[in-house]
Length: 256
Length: 326
Image (tube, rainbow over all chains, first blue to last red; front, side):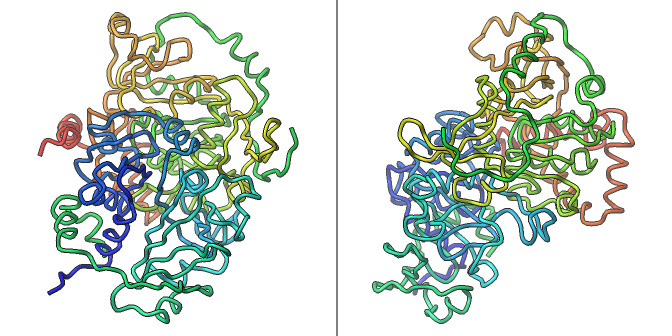
């Protein structure tokens, strides 16, 4: 019988599989950090984890609560600084970064700044933090988020961090280096971006989910890959490592 | 250098390096005793209306002892810059101390959620804001530290973050590529919390440095708050460890626990219960006013606040968490 799991566990396991061995990943707290830790314990033991505040390749004893707390450089190879990690991204030495936001549009642009009028916002969020830098400078950015119409919107109220901006060629025209969004992992599916138009495309549906369900939870027209796949559910081994070693206190997986 | 596009955000500080040099020309280089209380440091170096910045990242290695004092002395009209300012931002919002803000990460406390009071203040329309990315702010400080008028990045381009900043997209004179020019930022006064310092201000930070090398060198005035005051000979025994030399420093404040309830690497972890209490009481403005009266306005010093929060006993508990002694 297939093991039972919750949606957060599924998303973390799926994200972990995309992190190749021998690459570098810039992570934040929560699910992305769990995905990186799980990847290290499964197929990517040589995945290098970076935290923007300066932690380089720590041996994380537990989930950090801040991108700059002591855990982010626990038994690390270096306790560096923000300029060091960000220039590493700028030089092209960081392969993956995880981002999050309140709104995402079909080109993978992200809003984490405000809803409503900028000068007197209805809701003020934190802003870029390091997200714009990662989205601009890392090779492949990933997002893990719950799938809903209020999050996947036609137009972001504010573009905090760049995806493909207005589509093919727009990053280059703006002066951004090659890079951009790679995978978006939600509780319904995995999405990538169409090679020609750079528009968001369903690539893999999670067990029990169909295309109509995903489209019903999305505020813009989604493309469907002609190689549409079915997401492999978490294996027993992935779940064991995630529950026993990565997040035994259920700080992240308990949120589902 | 061709300017291709300009952000419309406000530029609060003059990026002219010669004006900065004129200031630094007359800044004292004397290796003298700079010890003083947090109260005196704020009275002397953080007047109403000045531009202030804090070291550290998130709630980690923040000079909370100075943030409390700024609120207690009811400073108003400050400028402030925040690359991932969390609890320090929350404290300054409690006193509504600033009304000009260079924001890279504000309002939130990372995994702990958003500060209700900071959100109320930022949504009031009373604060003039320019948005930046964390690295753009660090690059502004680095340019200031280098004594040049701007720094260059390849981030922010093409986004509303760029539009709401005071950055300019420029054409590289060598390659013709588009780069993002960010203006140098020399804050009037900066506070940085460190592990050890001598009475002259020679300071040692342990763990990640965040942007504090750049920030300390960009600062016109620098207040060092330190967990431990050490003899100058301790500094001289291991000069490799020094990250901030004395001539950058104006005030040295001995403040064990001065980062509480934040995380001070190798000494104490963040007090998550107390931070959760801040978040909880902020939901109700009346309850929050009483909370501030108890913890900030109703006490004379940060040490009294620490005592109210459990003092040395609590710091010892947090030390065990920090050292992963389960």
